[in-house]
Image (cartoon, rainbow, N blue to C red; front, side, top):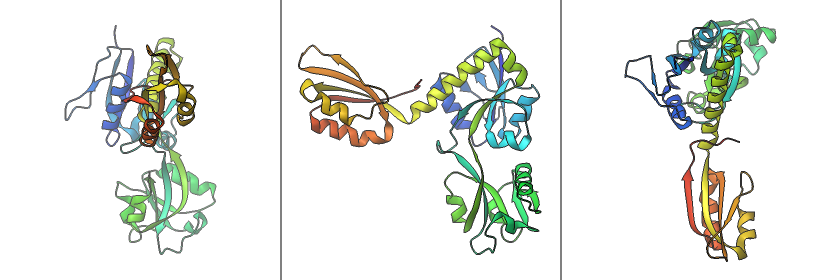
Length: 291
């Protein structure tokens, strides 16, 4: 079958995390060290890597049928696209990122209104200007090419910068005044492509699989054998996604229990289950979890 979707993948900090996510979703993407055109193991897919900051414009204009970018860049570019699915992942974690207004720790600026007549550096220029206008503040907003946090106070009075944990902000002796925007990766589609039945079905299928791969990252499967006499105690201990699967064993006094739990709680649950009397406890990773 000929190519159905031209898919835009984010170049840069999200690149490797995106390739890993697609692998878990069942799509293998390979590329050369300097290549902007990936090779897919799905003949219905083609596309290339472009910067997330530019993605929504390419999707809006029809160069791509769909693509991955940040919600922030869709807003920054004012792009009219379909936001198909939220995919909360980044280079380092699965956290929501935030664009924050920050100033030096010893700055007199305490609120947005205090920026009147001041200067602000950011990559998110249009959104920041709009935010200040909404608050009735006249300030100079200049584009920053990077390393924004080091520009205060010598070059500008404040910055609007992206952070996941706030560690970089604190490390540069800055103080957060306000959160302007929360953002995460989104799957977006061109409006005309979304109206095409075949393309829409393919996009929706990919969204389902990508979301399922993200759901599975924080969870593990758990199997164990349990004496019937302690089954109720075991079920009270297990924080199951749904009711666990319980199956009879050849030994009528025992049952097999299988469930899905949060990965981060398994280290407490497995010892507790062992102390209760469970045996043959097996934890296994998940690729996809469709709820």
